[in-house]
Amino acid sequence: MTPGELVELEAPGFTAAVDPQGAQLMSFRHGARELLWQGDPAWWPDRALLLFPVIGPLTDGQLIHRGRSYPMPPHGFARLREFTVVERSQGRCTVELRDDAETRAQYPFAFVLRVSFEASPDGVAYDVAVENAGDETMPVDVGFHPGFQWPLAYDVAREEHSVVFAEEEPGPIRRGAYDPIMLVPEPLPTPVSGDTLLLRDELFDDGPVVWDRLNSRSLTYGAPGTPRLEFQFPDSPSVALWTIPGAPYVCVEPWHGLPAPVGFRGELGEKPDIALLEPGETLCSRLSVRVVPET
Image 1 (cartoon, rainbow, N blue to C red):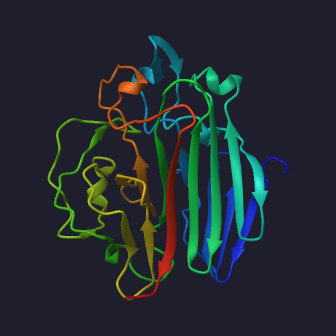
Image 2: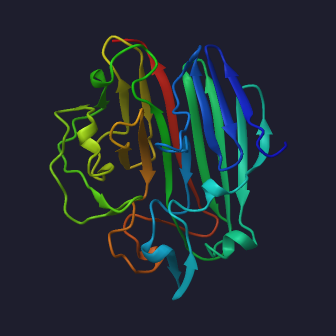
Image 3: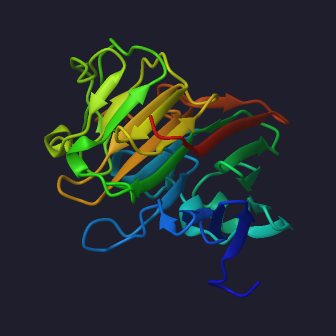
């Protein structure tokens, strides 16, 4: 493939497009309706970032391992790298990134990162698998960061949209400092009423809303009387919602891991909620997005 060429995926009623640069979903269409945010530098230039090997920034942009510092960009480097297409068919593709001299200068671990995308008759899914290919314990975060149109392309007003969790979510939420965020320690009361969160711009005045004590492993997003998007994330114990107030998108972000606490200066393996993979172990994380009939 030539640089910049997208991998097109098709299934009855749906099309999707994947950019091997960053393993990023670039389009998700239901018929003629584009559901994925299409990027705008005035608001947010990306569309569906893959967060690896960290979620959020590290203090002073430095990863610490065995007392040595390594430069690490916010949300990690996978979003900046060209993946290799290792599988491709009409409805499915797999892209892969392996450690090299450049990654080891930022993240001193041997790994194999594979991302598989699949279009189906009701939506799109992607599976992330990260393997510890080295001989020492490997700390790692994996996060999804896709943005979707707000309002969705079903001719319903913005203020009619909500997020409905699969379970009631009475637990507190977390907020952060900076952009991207580092988490502040104090939990805050949830804005969810039962299982339902009404989407309003003022909800995001203080940045992302993070659920780190989540009961649900799925949620829906949309408006009454129209098709909704159902997100299933069975392997992600946390989720965040984010937009810039007034922006025409909202990000639904299942995470395996969390941003570092404000001021965290410890070793990467000491970062709260980071996964610790033993040699030969693989961490799998799945996100499926499907269109469910209007209710």
